[in-house]
Amino acid sequence: MSRIPEKEIQTDILVIGGGIAGLTAAITAKEKVPEIDVLVVDKATASAGWAGKAPRTAGHLTFVTPEDNPEDFVRYVVYNIGCFLNDQILLREYAYATRYLIEQVNSWGVNILRRPDGKIQYNKIGPFPWGTTLADLDMCARLASYAGKINIKFIDKVFITDLLKKDEQVVGAVGFSLLDGIFYVFKSVATILACGDQNYGLMPLWNGNGSGILAAYKAGAEMRNAEFGNYGGGFLNADIPQSGDWLVTGQDFLYNAVGEYLTPKYRPGPRPDSDPESYLAWYREVLSGNGPIYVDVLTSTLDNQRKFFFAPPGARPLADKFWKNLIMKTISVRKDPSAKLIRVVHAFQGELSCVKVDQNYSTTVPGLFAVGDISFSGSALYGAVPSPPGRIKGSGLMHAIFSGVKGGSAAAIYAKALKVTGVKPEINYSQVKELKEKIFEPLNLEKGIPPTEIIYRVQEVIYPLDYSIIKREDRLKEALEKTLAIYEELDRIKAKDYHELTKCIFAKSMVTCAEMFYRASLMRRESRGFHYREDYPERDDKNWLKWIIIKKEDERMRLYTEPVPIEKYPYKP
Image 1 (tube, helix red, strand yellow):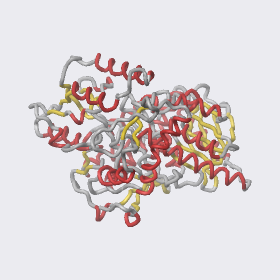
Image 2 (image 1 turned 90 degrees about the vertical axis):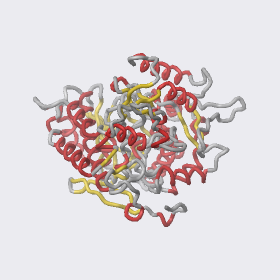
Image 3 (image 1 turned 180 degrees about the vertical axis):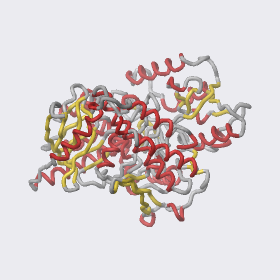
Image 4 (image 1 turned 60 degrees about the vertical axis):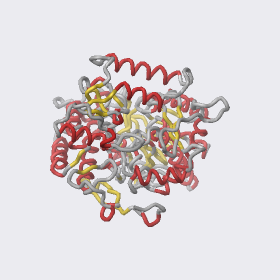
């Protein structure tokens, strides 16, 4: 192990992840306290803006428009989306901040769609108290360029695996280069996790690996709302589900085998975006003998374009190119590209985002902050839903910016306060040595199993709809038992190179995240938001107006409940 070279780097603020949340946090921190050093580290190429999900989204930014009342937004989200598991104080701040934050990122160079009079162009979809504007997909490239101009540093192609602690405080992190394997030791006054959520490698578009969740959990950080990490997000072409022919608005145009239009039956009235009812429709109709289920893909595509792709030609050149190519490729693999109805199966992205943070996006471990998708559900901002879109398309990018600004500002103040008092990060080199040996262990095994085998086994446990979306105690216990059995294989994972070594970490994080999800799902004996229990189909405010908290204690996963302080909030059940 000593043959692997080491490199030690010290900074005031270490940002782990260079997507839109990480870049926003880094820029905010640097502008808040210009004299501090800020370093962004990512396994991709964050310095050029090609990291995270944002460059592969539709560029939606949902905000409270000038014609909307922020209080109406708060009320709607609490009653109709979060089901009273929201942090209503944080949600209210978010509602009032969104319009300003779009102007803020625009001032940093992000291309926001504008009307001829210079005002933000947006689309109102349905009777909802928000609107959606559009940004081009070079948003992170523009933010990275701005970050470089204000002397924010970058290290690309380095995968951070573990956090370092001293006296219960996070003081840095370790990781390795994907290019040459150099072992990096980072010393930092404040550390910001911005490395995404858990998608279990199931969908080709977004592929958060949950490594930051695992690192935070091992460092003693609490988790919250893990039972809601089961986002499906539309339907897949059943003939070629692996193709990525993903029908993102299919839930509004479902038909059964006898031609019955299912959407009004299961999802009456206007709905903002995906919800469990669309999967209940698919599930119950198939069990009733009315399958297979179809999506009217022609109407769905037109509806999607009308609602979410309203930019004039040429206003978003990168987005136009990306989505045109993607749509044409998915259509080309269909058996009949002109078909109106396509047989579908449910999609599943997971979007577990459970790192618990407070209203400043500080975790429960001093010195550690978490922004973006990694803490979307853990913030309790949107309540009983998975991370983006959290039933509001465009909330993912908006939350990334909001949390980046909040967490970056808090981390800057924290780092400055410690520096003023002369406190410097001190690391435990025994911990560093132990972590190094553990990280590179898969490279030294003569025989073992590839990490892809572990990943596939986790996918088999997390994807089935009757495990992860339509829940029942016996099936949840079965899924948990299968998940725990995978742990026994983790010490046998073998890697042949540094890229495969990253997959070893991915595999471990997927197993841990699946365990969190199933344990929390078993504990919550009611149905609320995206958590649907067949054996407890009703919401139970008397017994379950609580958050489920997960923490590592004595090498075991412990679960607790924390009452929602509903008496402090204006909106009550």
